[in-house]
Structures are given as structure tokens and as C-alpha cells.
Image 1 (cartoon, rainbow, N blue to C red):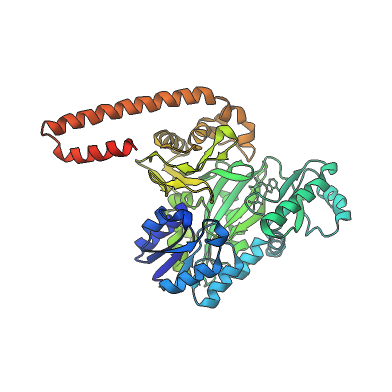
Image 2: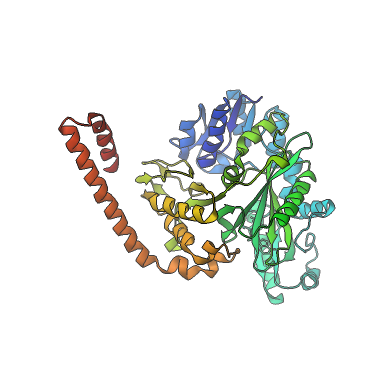
Length: 501
Ligand code: ADP
């Protein structure tokens, strides 16, 4: 069994991985850059090692530095989290060579699935339906013919693409050459690889993905779906499970294909098979993410499995104890991604110091975060502040719970997406579960339009909350002075001083 894990990441995911380590009696090792000297993951870990300047290519992406810390700390395994080195085949291979366990799949699986063109070929061989499209475009003269064969609109996509980069929608023939040039230059800059292909643009699409777990003994299971169609610029904003459009038969079929896709690359560990689903419920393999997803907690909540613990057990060489037939979805979970960004200013990142934070609490709420009062969100990394996950027996109750949680969630010092997410929870299309990846664009006016009225309401709510708070503090103070509730006095003083920062 693994005894010491180096977490090669930062932010909420580093803390989340360390939490499971602690529950398993595993020692956790943090690495941190200059900008992260006071970060939560450094405080939370059992040991922490400095790895260099703030830019990630000089710290979190520096393979030699991470391996060096693993050796010095005596870690027997490395968990890469998501992002950074998590889908880097060379890193997985290097860990193997160094005799350190990489908590993730083999270099072969990462490489095959990381290249979308190779992944598509592999899926054809495995009998998994893929979006109709081409192989690598090597002869630009043939492009018009190929695109016409598929039928407009089409998507030009970078084989190495990720995070919505290197992708262009083409509505008609005259746009295609420009789209290819744009996708290629974006892919070259972001991934150092400008291979592209063309696929059919699926109209009114849903992004539905399946969580899978596979051990090293040929056992592969799926843990049902996540609906990730609330997107902005092809990036997920809110996820929920079960999907409002899922049917039992469809779930079974897609789940079986997800398992087949993972088996096709001898997958080991936790992974996600992403599908695109049209309005007639035809589904096509989109890609596989060979790592833990940001949105994994909604699956954990509804299925009752700690995915990080399973990853660690699998990497330790244990057999999967969970059987497909034992798994059930219980209730409904929704996740909102809370970003330090300004929805009223085109979602510009808003780094800065957190002056005040009140985290939502209560029944059915999980808050995976890492910031605290006085913490400065660095400008060098993704501006994700936290993930707010709610669970309830029904979808309706889960939406109401999310509304309650977002209402209670207060952050000052940086701009956040909290009120924007609150408006999504109120939006009739979302409430009815009638939405696809065009949801935000389609409901732009509802989601953005009422910002003046909302702001006023928010100001009133903040003033009211402060008056209520001051009143309670005065009462506590009075009780403390008159000799009652003396134990509260210390508490009261501490809260007051924190508030006054
Ligand atoms: P990335 O790897 O950059 O995240 P994906 O291939 O996973 O790219 O696609 C991201 C999102 O882009 C999807 O969730 C979907 O909203 C949209 N998308 C991608 N391919 C298509 C397609 N063929 N038709 C319609 N939408 C698509």
C-alpha cells in the first residue's frame, strides 16, 4: 500500500486529494511556488517543499523539480490532480522509470487518448460511435471536398486540443480556410502541435460524460453520467447528475460504450469518457480525459464513492472491490464553479486579496475550496476559487438548495461569479432541465440583463445582514459584560476583529 503521496498540484484539488490521503493514513507532501508560499495546500500537507518561481513552467510543470522532491521526501507515489502534469505521458513514463507510482494511467493510454485523431481511430476499432469526421488533414486541397462530404456546419479541431482551444465552428464553405489557419496557429501556440481534423457540428448538443474506474486486473466499471452542457466558450460552468435528459436504456448503452472505450487502451485508474448527444439522443464519443475531473464530486455524492481513494487503491495494485451491479444513483447533485472573475465585465479574471469570506454551510452542501480571509489569489494560475456542490433527493430540491447556498456565500475583495450562477438557478430553461450547450448564449438577457436591479438587491441584503450581525454582536457583548455567556466573549472579539480587517 502507498504510504506517502506527493501531490503535484495546488489550489482546491491539492487540498481535496490530501483530505483522502489523511483519511487513509497516508502522509501527504505539498510542492509550492513563490506565489503559493501561504497557500492552503501548503498548510494542509504533512510536509511542503518549495519548487521555484510563480510561472507554472518553472514550478508545477517542471518535471525534474517534482521528481527531485519525490526523492528527497521519500514519497512512493505522485498524484497529479487535474491540469498541470496530469495528462503528460512523458511524466507518467518518467515516474515509472524512477520507481515512483504515478496515480493515473499508463503513458500509452494518455498518449492514445490525448491525441484526438488517434483516439478517434482507436474508438472506431473498439466499435464506439464517434462524431462523423475526417482523419488528420494533410492535404489542404482536399479540405473543401471533405467538409462538403460531412455537410456544413462543421468543426475544425486541433488533435492536441483541450480547454476549448484550437476549435472553430464553420457555417459555410467560404469560412473554412480562415478557420483552419486560426485553429492551427492557436494549437501551435498552446500545444506545439498544429495537426487538425474536421468533424460534423452537432446541432443543439448536450455534453454528457461518463465516469469510469479501471483496475490492473481487467475490471472496468462506469459510475454513470454527468451533464455538463452549461458552458461558456466550450468551458463547463455548472454540472449536474443525473442528466435531465437521460433515460435508463440510454444510460446503460452509453455506460457500456464508456467501459469499452476505456478497455480499448487498457485503462487503469479514474477517467472520463465524454460524449456529445444531439436532440434526438444520438450520441458520439468526443474525447477521453485521462485524469480526475474538476466535476468529480457530483458523482462521488450521488454514487457514494470516494474517487481519489479508489485511484490510490488501484495505483497501489489493489483489485476494484466495487461491482457494476452494486452501483446506484441516489438523489441529485449539482456543482457550481466559483471563479474570481467579473461576469459584468466579460468574465475578466479578478485576482486580488480575499477580504471577507462566508462559506455556505448546512445540510447537503460540500464546499471544495482553498481560499481564506487575507489570502491573495495569484494571477499566475486558473482563477477558480472553489466548487460548491449540493445534494438533495430530487433535482428541484437540489436547485433550491443551491440557491440557498449561493445566497449565503459571500466573498469580498475580488469579483466573483456567484451572482451569475444564482441567476442560472432562477432561469426557467435550467429549472425545467431544458437546456443544451447554447444555454448561456440563448439566455444571455436573462442571465446578464437584470444586473442593475440585482446589484441594488444585493446591496440591500448585505446592509441588512451587517445590521443583523452588529445587533447580535451587541447582544453578545452586553451578555458578556453582565457576566452571562462569558465563553462567548472571546469568540465575539475574534469575529469582530476579523470583520474589521
Ligand atoms: P476540449 O478538449 O477543448 O475541451 P472537446 O472536444 O471536449 O474540446 O469539446 C468541448 C466542447 O465543445 C463540447 O463540450 C461541446 O460543447 C463543443 N463541441 C466540441 N465538438 C463539437 C461538435 N462536433 N459539435 C458541437 N459541439 C461541439
